[in-house]
Length: 75
Image (cartoon, rainbow, N blue to C red; front, side, top):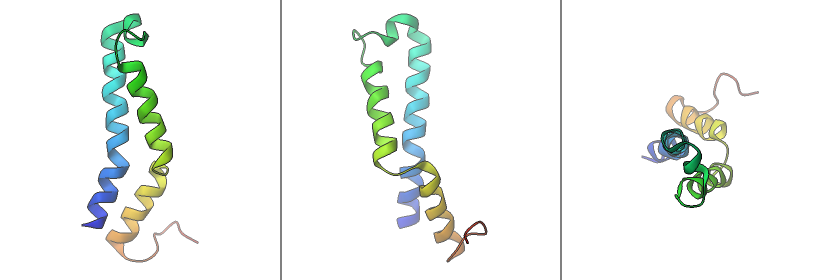
């Protein structure tokens, strides 16, 4: 179960950023204004991606758990 949590933790911010990006594209210039919440949401997601650890580190932890011990790229 811990591996599943790490996998979700690695994927969720990326999925959220993609969804927000689509909303910004859909709403055009107005989507980047403060009238709509997308600009703030994008800043929140970027902060979450930084605060939770990089996506690459999370993926490495998932791979290590799935395959046991070190991954092939580890020294």
